[in-house]
Length: 111
Length: 114
Image 1 (tube, rainbow over the protein chains, first blue to last red):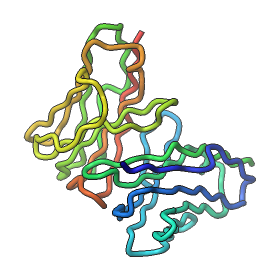
Image 2: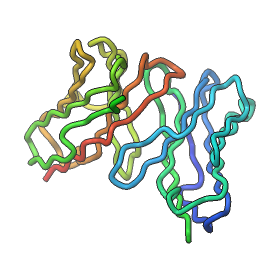
Image 3: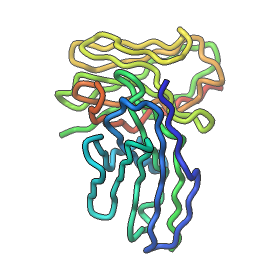
Image 4: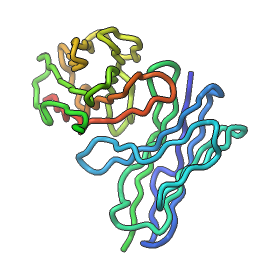
């Protein structure tokens, strides 16, 4: 079945620096890759996604890149701010009607 | 547009009891999925409903069940609670639920079994 691996598990960066989180997937039929941000005490929030027909997508300070050949996709956050501190999850379709999630990356932005 | 609403937000139950959690999806969305989130196992898929039909089910024991009503609201039930059922239960709403469909989560229900 589908498997999603996410690295690193924790990431600390200085405010203003960039952060990169990487995920790999196993199902070559996967065509949609969302990223979620989960703050303490809240549910995961969809922050950006990418479909398999594009290689990169940007939304202000966040971007996602996709390499279908290597089966990996990455989240890039530039000019990090304290409010970016949260747990980030990647996901990929796990067959029909469900998603498989990565194990999460706890990002700490140090002021 | 209202988001995904889950009730209650917190629950404390005793081993052996049963519990029912509720989820109201985004207006117009017909697919509701349920996930269990624990520190050790991460986000694990429970089941997905569309138009009152369960289309997919994860690897959880039969104590975990769900249903969906004609207005797309969904409930999940856990019977004979065990300590290991303590978790954050998340509901995700989407328009169709198929591959490539955006899914939006509620705030979750924090279940503690004592």
